[in-house]
View 1 (cartoon, rainbow, N blue to C red):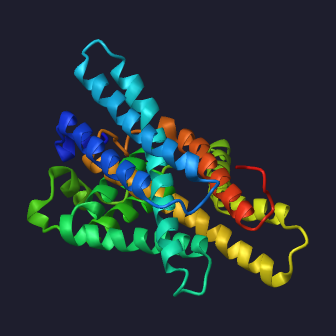
View 2 (cartoon, helix red, strand yellow):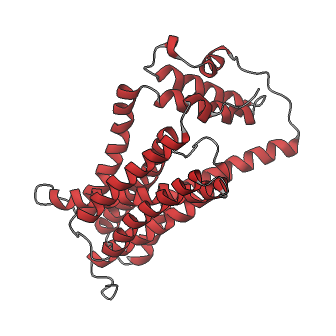
Length: 306
């Protein structure tokens, strides 16, 4: 079976899609530039993020206008940077809100900000589905494409079942489903093929490595905090651990949410960018470092950054 092209399903006009990106970038950049300085460490990176958002969307618009440009190369290389810069912007704006709430909430601005990000990411899914009615539909189609890569194996059947479950969660009436969604409804579980020992070991090793990498993303801030605070008390270590995990969740939820929005309304195609997945990880490490330096500076661990 052929994979579903999410771009074709959405029937997006690519020029309008880049216009959407420009509008979002202008809105976020304005918010960053007029927001109060709540972190001496993040002041310059925040100005840089605002300018970078505007520059990236300008370059992407130029690539579409110019028929001689290396359009695919510019789009594919700039998309991860655009997504992660937008994620940084959301985290910083949450920090601004957290600083305002500190007088009435018994927690640090960073803790409030990361909690807000996690809660907002989860609530936005519900609100988006109610208003626009295609989040679970598109996630179902994306998971369907993943299923096609492993069809005929037990893992492929599990992914197909997940695709069907996501489709059932959609509030869009069935009579408005695109033909691709009906294909998911009509497809039954495939007979699993007998795999060789090497294939079984390879598939399980791949799953194990993927799970380890995914877990590592969440544990990275906690490991860094433990290194910085090796002699902290149990209470302090617990607080740092909770904050680190909150930060990891907030960062990753924001990246996923941002990718969905750019994929749905912008030039990004979140279903066909697997070749760029490591760029998201690499760029997100910059976000971890910047907020880690902010955390350390606020506690007096470093004093000569600014």
